[in-house]
Length: 127
Image 1 (cartoon, helix red, strand yellow):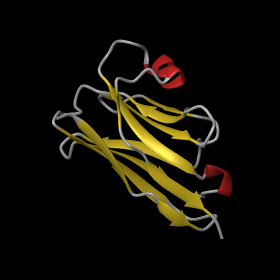
Image 2 (cartoon, helix red, strand yellow):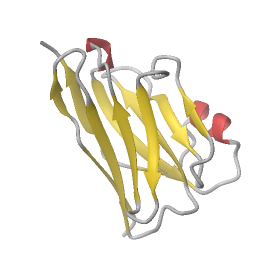
Image 3 (cartoon, rainbow, N blue to C red):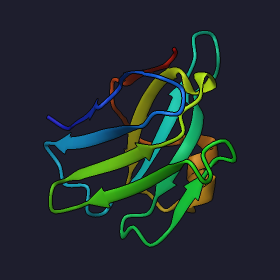
Image 4 (cartoon, rainbow, N blue to C red):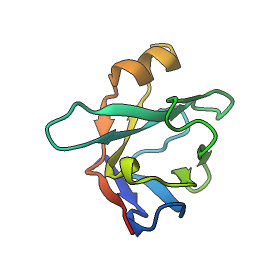
C-alpha cells in the first residue's frame, strides 16, 4: 500500500526550529516531485515548498524563503522540511504530497495537483 507519512511536528517556541520528515512506503520517491503544504482550519491548503525528483529545483512560498529548506534523501526514501525562525503564524497542519506527472514544478506547487498525500503533522509555534 502506497503511503506518505509525515513526522517531526510539535510545539516549539517562536524563533525555534523543527525538521519535518515525509517518508514513503510501498513506493520509491526517486521519480516523484514532493511538496509541503500547510492548512489551517477553514482555509485552503497552501504550498510551502516543493522539490523536483532530482532535488535540483526547488520552490518556496514567500513566507518560507530564508527560513525553510526542503531537501530529499532518495536513499532513505524521505523528504525533509527544515523550519527555522518559526513564527506563531506558522502554526498549522503540514502535509507532504508526491506526484510523478509532467506538470511544471512551479505550476504543480501552486495548484497543489499532487496525486498522493500524507495525513499531516501538527506544528504549533507558541510561547
